[in-house]
Every structure is written in structure tokens, then in C-alpha cells.
Length: 161
Image (cartoon, rainbow, N blue to C red; front, side, top):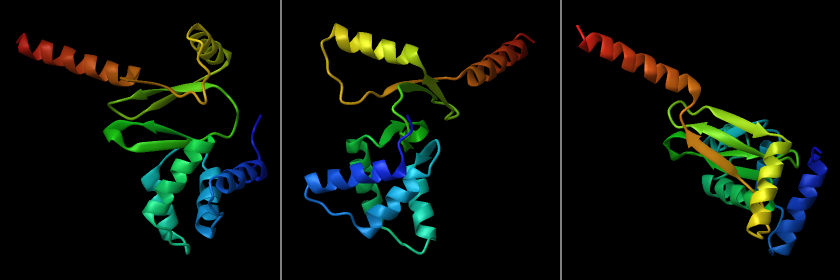
């Protein structure tokens, strides 16, 4: 089920109250921008977007707010190519993971009941109660593997002559 903006904002306000913090104008602007992302985004991409607008928000405030969003469970933090922090807003309560290509940065999302069943089996086996799950497999995508194999084949052919 997709979370509404009002539900998400309400959860954010409760989190802030519980932790002795306040809902500031800057946090609200960051929330609005992150909520409207559909897919993955880099923290620095968010910094650039918020720099261009009329509401100049510091990089530190953006990163601290993203950390809060992680704690609430609004965003999931991933690492991709070059160790840049990449996030995604979690609009739905679904189970999924990611395959991340270390060469080209391609992200393949894994979704469905099989993911949920796998996560449940692992947690039950170890009598583990998860607060959140982030399955991420780093490696090389099929496109990059094929390109690599073609280059190796070409180099082998050249060295034979």
C-alpha cells in the first residue's frame, strides 16, 4: 500500500517530537523534495536541487535530515559506484532488494513475494526480529559482462596473430 504524503509527514512530526526536535521550514522543504522522488537519487543531487531554489539549505542540514529519514524508514540508503551515497524514498511497504553493477552503476530492483519469503525464512531461522531489511548485491551486470567478454575475445584474437 502506497503511503500518502500526509501519513509520511505525520510520522516525521511524531519522530521529531519523540526525539526533542522541531519541524523546521528547512526540514519541510527537504521532506517535500524527497517525497516526490520516484526512484533512486544521490544526496548530492538533492543538494544541487535545493541550492538552485529560493530556499538555500545547507549540505549539513540535508545530510542530517536524510539520516533522520533513514531512521524513520522513509528512505533506504545504498552505495553504488564510486561509493556515492544513493537513496530511494520508500513509497510502499514492499519487500525488495537491489543488484548493483560496480562497472556502470546500473540498479536492478528485485521485488515480489519471493523476496519477502526469503527474508522471512532467514529471520525465522536465526530467531531474528528485523527493524528493516536492505538486500543489496554488488557485482557486474550482464551488459558489462558481455562487453568484457567481447573485449577479452578481441584481445585473444589479436594476440594470436
